[in-house]
Length: 384
Ligand SMILES: Cc1cc2nc3c(=O)[nH]c(=O)nc-3n(C[C@H](O)[C@H](O)[C@H](O)COP(=O)(O)OP(=O)(O)OC[C@H]3O[C@@H](n4cnc5c(N)ncnc54)[C@H](O)[C@@H]3O)c2cc1C
Image (tube, rainbow, N blue to C red; front, side, top):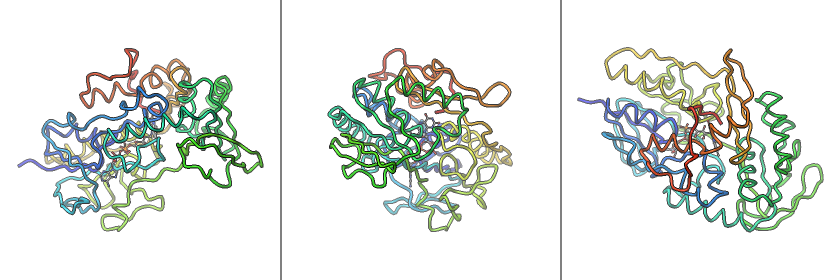
């Protein structure tokens, strides 16, 4: 009799594990959404109407044998999971890959669980943005920077200001990457203000056109017509908060061992943003962790001892496109250190299509309407 593998969360890591094990076990993927979200595309989808549907990939074609249950998991026991509708799904192996939250539009609103509703939200925000001459972005991490770059690409005339309390931009990057980023932001006329913030968030609702004036902690007044929050991310682990399976860390992440087993549970795994690992919380890391889980479950399915071990990342790889023609990043050099990525590499590997072609392949989507023939995911470096 075939073993059942229940995968909780159909994101970057979960869908990779599900697809890889589909022909070796009875795979059940559980997610409240009807489609995988390639969040890398969500910021361009905010700025460009022709991208509104691009970040979403229907789960339908992902699995050949397995099935997808559209629901949330509310509790996990070593032998199965409980769904929000009260049903229990028994499992021989469980993979927890529920990712993390981020403010809209970086991630879809939790109320928009269908791809159609999430794309409608993006179209509505695009319309709001089109009416705003002055844009305020709170947060100068990769999400805030990419959002500003996408807005500039779509609207050359808008005034764009980014605020961040940190004194340094992309602190985990090489100094030359940060210098190049500042140079490009200046060329793009994006006003970056570091070491300053707002005592209070604007009264106007985020991502909604409405003129407001705020005062920074430096005492400067900024008037804008729309604002976006691009900071604050939390792991999706509330369904484990009762401690019945494992005690979460202070950061609400899931403690795992080197095999990516949840501590104390040889048949339960956790990976991606929820795993308490030193790896940066990035899709590229989630997908680098996935083969360890796949190999270890495959070994158990064959009746062998699982031996695959995950080695945390030693360099910080990241690609930060600023629209389709600009961007900075750093990659791993041949000697294992970090090296600055030239702009053409950033554009080719990520900026052109934001990995859409790669996920089109995973999800069997043939036509990518709205993306022209330049769309290529580069050589598979999933950083960014
Ligand atoms: C705007 C933006 C751009 C980014 N760009 C990049 C990039 O270019 N490169 C990069 O490496 N990283 C990028 N990141 C980071 C990256 O998106 C995350 O690190 C990645 O999504 C983590 O993958 P994951 O598989 O852990 O979870 P996710 O991909 O977030 O998937 C989690 C899934 O679990 C589901 N889920 C949540 N709770 C439950 C539950 N209780 N029951 C069932 N299902 C549940 C969710 O619906 C979701 O489908 C970006 C992040 C943002 C916000």
